[in-house]
Image 1 (cartoon, rainbow, N blue to C red):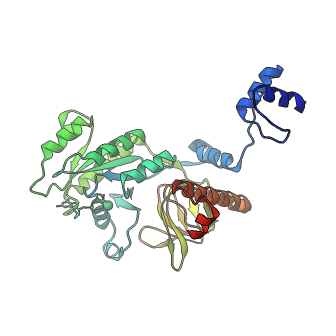
Image 2 (spheres, rainbow, N blue to C red; image 1 turned 90 degrees about the vertical axis):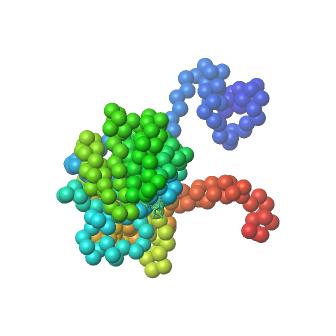
Image 3 (tube, protein in one colour; image 1 turned 180 degrees about the vertical axis):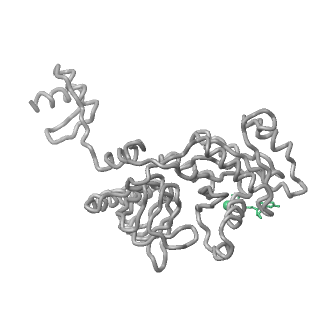
Length: 360
Ligand code: GTP
Ligand code: MG
């Protein structure tokens, strides 16, 4: 009876009425006091269902096929990450197309001797850490860029830690070997000091000399990456409803919210209902990394999508839902929007009074 429960709480110094919610500890205490076995069951929320779907093992999602590796490029500021990915890309897309690339993109896919590789150029190691923290990590291999004239720097050390925490093998691209100040021995020593013993010193860390600027060593780097990927035997279900991660998103003047996403598994199709962080919508149009319109994107493909109702955040996971689940998608997206705004306000210290609020 309620009065017994209120009595137990009262004796424990807690004033409660019949309408008060009780927390788990209170419930267990009450059970003990009254000699009743208490079993706590949680209501399954839509978020629970979504997390469960994202956590489904590949085997439960139908036909599994080999997929390209997703390679994230990390390294200290200015060591040449963007130059490296741009160079690999321009050398590996058909002539004429490369010239047309104007906008900066977060990810792209190249074809090397008939094998596809997907590269992700991170804006910084912090973004990578953030994605990993949110369980949105899609990286199979990390290319650690170390400038030969600078060696291992503080952010390089952080990148190594991130790669290790993500369980991703590290391939080192020793960059800027064209510079007179390049000191290969120092880089090798620095790496060894971080427990990345180079293969040439009897360890198992591949260190590939490159010059992102003039293209030296890039074929070698791609070969090393393909061998590393082969060892991992990367596979993904191809027929399942797609899921993956948003790498970058923005509002386009003409097209509305646009998101660069990478498909982790399944195949994303135009017309699919997507829930991505605090946004949702039917995919209206999809473009590949060369700005060509495409209708479907298999695993490990980076694509730009239009059709979401709002701009998601980098690192948000996305998921395709059944068309009938549009109301669920809207509800979850709206709940996440509200939660996102509340978090943002509390992080900023938030307006506290109505007066403060109105003056903002
Ligand atoms: P952040 O994104 O700011 O962390 O920098 P990043 O690592 O992407 O470096 P970025 O590619 O922007 O290169 C930084 C500078 O190094 C640029 O001026 C490049 O031209 C130069 N650079 C990159 N690779 C090489 C190289 O192989 N040789 C030489 N000499 N310069 C290079
Ligand atoms: Mg860069």
